[in-house]
Structure formats: structure tokens, C-alpha cells
Length: 229
Image 1: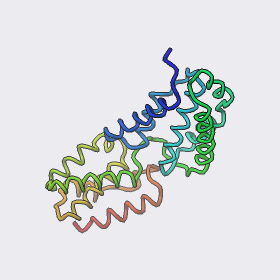
Image 2: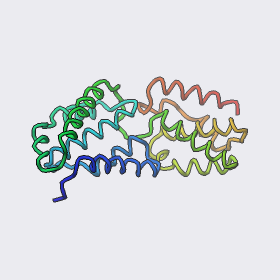
Image 3: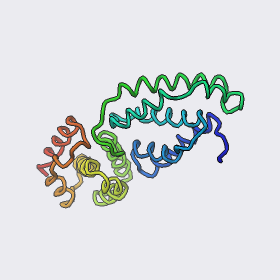
Image 4: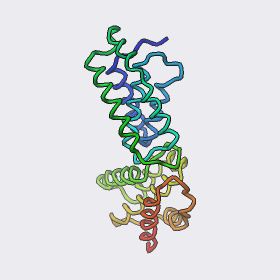
């Protein structure tokens, strides 16, 4: 039996775990799922604890561009079945204050309204989203160029940092490769033959539902503009 959580401690701890995973180069979606799995179990009897885990998880999920339809249904159901009366009863046990209870109530309502409006993702895998990984790789390359690293060193560091993600998800792999190649071109560095050949021989239809149609079209344009190198 673990000690009962205090309202703010649980929130801080959850956010802390998410940051820890992100510092280890997990995507936002992977980080929040890993944190959720550490906090949540079917056997939780503490209503406030369970409610907060779902509320914070949904709030963080809203930062993603899309959500898998089955996950969306489950989360809506969980938020709708939060027992606010039971949580209000936990005020007298000192787990939360009246002010925190009011905050929990409004956060629940806001999260519920917003998740209902969230676009559907047809891929159920926690992964880097297209714009997210493009930005992450661009930023990392810029840092490395600022340190005067050469092209080969940059390729090595980027592929090493994102190896786990590239091995796991095809859309991440090709987006990392394309972004890396674009950054090398932009900074007048040569793209290695291996990198270029991976990009030029890539078949976009292998991606299935990992990217949206707009993202696929954008990626294709980016691949085509690298074809002249």
C-alpha cells in the first residue's frame, strides 16, 4: 500500500517523469505514455489519484496533433466517470484543498471538451510526430553547427541520438534522414552517399498511417528537392 498522494505532488511528479524521458530523447507521446504506465494501475482505489493521472495525461496528449480513436474513447469515458463527490470527500483527509478541488473540476471539464475536438490518428503507436521530429533534428543540427562540427560528425551524432526512434518507426527514420540532409545542404556540407541513397530509394507508401496525407505530401516534396544532390 503506497502513501496517499498529495494533489500538487502527484502533478509535479508526473511532469518530472515526462521531462526525464524527453531528456533521454523520447518523443512527447512516448514520454507521456511511459509516465502514465508508471503511475497508473487498475488497482488504484484513490479517486483523486486516478482522476489526476487521467487529467494530466489528457492535458499532455492535447499537445499532440492527433489521437488514436480507441484511446480517445477510453479517455473520454475515464474523464466522464470521475467521481467528484468522492474526491471532495478527500479534502477532509488533507489530500487536497477546496481550491485544488475546484481547480481539478475545471481542469477535468476543459480537458474533456478539448479531447472531444481532437483529430483522429489512424496509427496507434506512440511515436514522434512529423513536425515534432523535424524541429527536434533541425534544432540539434543547428547546435552542432554552432560548435563547428563537420558534416560527418553531425551525421554520426544525429543518427546516434535518434537510433532507437529510427529503428522503431519508419516515418521517424525517413524524417530524421531528410531533415539531416536538408540541414547539411543548408550549411554547405556534403551528404554522405549512404544517407542520400536511403532517401532516394525510400518508398512513401510503406508509411501506411504513420503520417497524415498532408504530411506525406510535404515529405515527398522534401525528398524530391534533395534528388539533385
